[in-house]
Structure formats: C-alpha cells, structure tokens
Image (cartoon, rainbow, N blue to C red; front, side):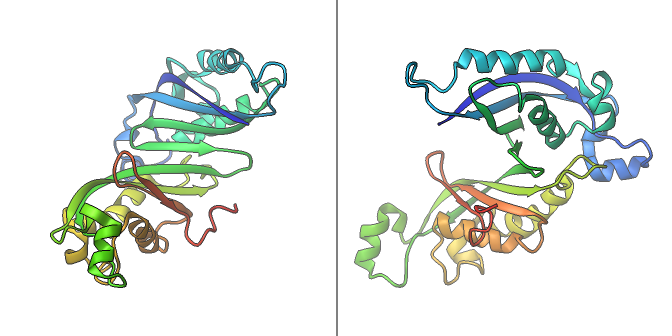
Length: 274
C-alpha cells in the first residue's frame, strides 16, 4: 500500500557559481542568479509504502509521518536562506533537484513500519522535481498553449464520428487551454545542480512546440495534424516526437486538455520500464 502526504515550507535561495562571469551566470540561471536571492513557498509530497496492519487497518499513523517530515523541515530548511544557512547548500546549489535529493537522503531511513517510496517537490505551479530509489532525479516544467481542434477520423463515417466524438466533432472546431508538462530524467549535474538547464529547455519547447501550436487551429494551421486526428492522445505523442531529438534525457510528456482530462506518453514505453 502506498500513502502520500503533503507538507509545505518556505525558503530563500539563489543560483550562482562564483568562478563564472556575470554573463555566464545570467545565461545559465537567469534571474535566479541574483546574489540577494529570492524565495518560494514549497509543497513537498511524501509517499511511503508498506503492508497494511491487520489490527489497525493502516500502514503507518499519518501523525508519525508528519512528525518525521515536519521535524526535519523545521530543523534543516524551513524559514532559512539555504545558500547562507545550510552546510549542504554551501557545496551544492539549492536547485529544486538538489533540494529534493537532499530531502530524500535525509528521510529515507527515518520511518518506522514503512519505507520512503517517492518525493515530489513543487517549487511553484510550473516546476517540480521528483526522486525515488536510485541516482536519477526527474524535473518537470509546465507550459501553456491555447489551440482549437476538431476530432474527426477519416477512417470513420460522418455518422460514426458524430456518435464517437459528439460536440467535439463540430465542423468548425472548438478549443482548449492546454497545459503541457515536459519531464526530463537523469543525474544531477554536479556544477549547476540541474538535470537540464531551464533556459535551454524553455527555449527549446517554445521554439519547437509552443510557437507552432499556440493560438492555432491544429487541424488547419499545422503540418503535424494535416492527416492526424488531433485527440489529446495523439497530440501528446506528436509533441514527444517533436522534442525527443532536441531535449536530452526526455522522459515523459504530459498533456492536460482540461482540468478533468490528462494524458501522458513515455515514447514507445521506454520510460515506464526504467
């Protein structure tokens, strides 16, 4: 059985490498390189796993999980300027990846009657990092684009299309505010503290995907969907194909069509088995 618990904390930090020039720091870290720092309200999701106790019907008391996590955060991270106040972050830039890695290493042996399985650390609504067993860390960046589409398959009759897709088969199309999640997975760079440079990732996704799809009618304005039915399943696989040769360590593409409909693709399943 797997159980997840959310906790929050606040911290300040900056990303900066002392022996780099101002231009190099700006290019790599953008506004995060401001030496005066900035801060976040972080949300940490802690997932533990274990067997259900036959007497109590639970894996572990949530109060016990909260105490372990909250005691650690209060002592080590919460309310602190990480670069200045924590020895680990004197040597390791307090990127989202390094923070979640530090939390994992600190908590993995602290639980009784269960074991730590997964951490997800949200720096803000558009960026989070994840850690499980092993050396790899995941980083997910969220993007947004607005587009119209019509769901219609040339392999079905008009009647079959209407029956299957309903109002989404409207001949003039309809639209969504899509939210795109791009996840990379790999080792943390010992110098930058990142799995991938965010500036590089943002530029690549904007150039290759967003500029082609944002404020477009997918069926009518894009080459990718001239012959493809732009269901969200297909859109997610197309975005993977567009990015896979340009984003190192691409692990997963997630696509929110609405708040209720979410799709993800790992590229021929290779992400699932790792």
